[in-house]
Structures are given as C-alpha cells and as structure tokens.
Length: 200
Image (tube, rainbow, N blue to C red; front, side, top):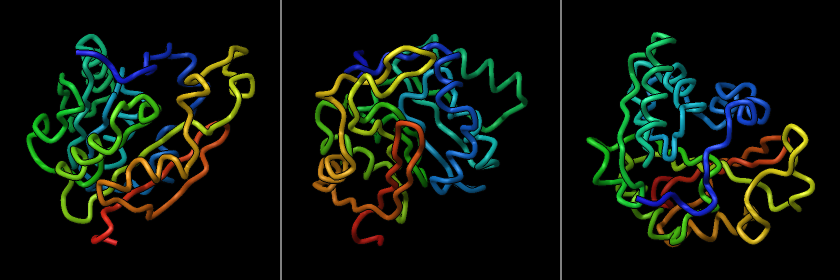
C-alpha cells in the first residue's frame, strides 16, 4: 500500500517542535470527552494518544499503512496507560470499510495535501461518520517553503501541494461538507472542521 503523496513521517523531535501541546490543538478543534475518533495517517501517535486521553472513554482508531508505526502507537499507549486506542493497518482510501463502526470525528493531520482524489476520500469520510459527525483537516498554510522551517530546516510539502483554506474547502465540498469551524494553528497550519451541509 502506498502512502498519500509527500506524507512521510517526520522524526519525533521535529513533530514535538511543531506541535508541543497536541492535546491543546485537539481541544481547539472541538474534541471533547465521548467523541469517537478515527486518526487517519496516525504515524507513531503524536495526536492519537493525546486524542485518546481527551475523548476517553470513547475509542480512537489509529489508521496507518505502516505496521511499524502502529506498533509504536500500541507501545506508547501501553506506556501511558491509555486503553481506548485501537490500531488498524490499512489504506485510508477505503476508510469506511476499515472501521468497525461509524465514528463521531475523522482527523486528517498533515496529510490532506497528499490526497490524490480529495472528493473521493471525503466521500469515504462521510460514509464513516455518525450523523452530525465532524471531518477535521489540519493542513499547511500555502506559504513559501523558506518560511516554514522547523529546527532550522525547511519543512512541509512542496509549494505545488500546499492548499489555501479555500482550496481545502473546495476539495471537500463535492462530498457535501461545509466548514463549521476554522482555527489558526501557529506557526504554519490551519484547522478546518467540516460537517455535512444537512447536519449544519
């Protein structure tokens, strides 16, 4: 299985420098206790484990194509005593069939820019959500590469893959989603919380 384009997992130091308080980010995006969540492209769980702590006792499904990364998620969950994480190895392009149940929210952090067919993927997300559920996209601002440095190195997707908030909205809209909430996530990201138009 192939990853989405340009979504290689960065090292932990990079991730922690960019997102020192992932639980605060998740709360800003509207996650609360009791919200079941699918974390798409979970990597080694930088958002997965804090999400599980925020939404407990609801389940958090960590989805990734890399089984080694999921092993790290499980080890970190064990280390922190988190019991509501379920790892799923598979291709998120078939998200609805991967999940054992519909969820209240789907999180796609630092990955949406690489989705080749965003409207098709958004349809999968829609089919994976409970009525009133949320599709949460954390994306890089459309800024020049030289302006997005982490630990002294240029980071983030190449300029041709970066998306403005309007481009992200437009990519998701064909699946029937509209933005319910928008959050600026300094230094280099924004968050868009989508709901189906008929759920707004």
